[in-house]
Image 1 (tube, one colour):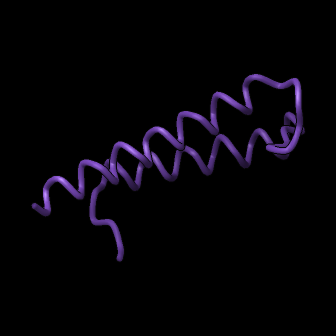
Image 2 (tube, rainbow, N blue to C red):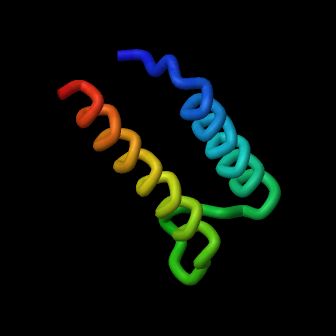
Length: 61
């Protein structure tokens, strides 16, 4: 199912940009330990995905 939400598409694009720049410029790895920035970025993405999933399921009821 494709998302039609512009806000969610923007969040996805921003997550991609942060991940790409972090990977290429700052040498971030999601399997690295000891870098709290990577954990925070991943955590924020997870929380947004959970909230949007719950919100979408509640709208369908």
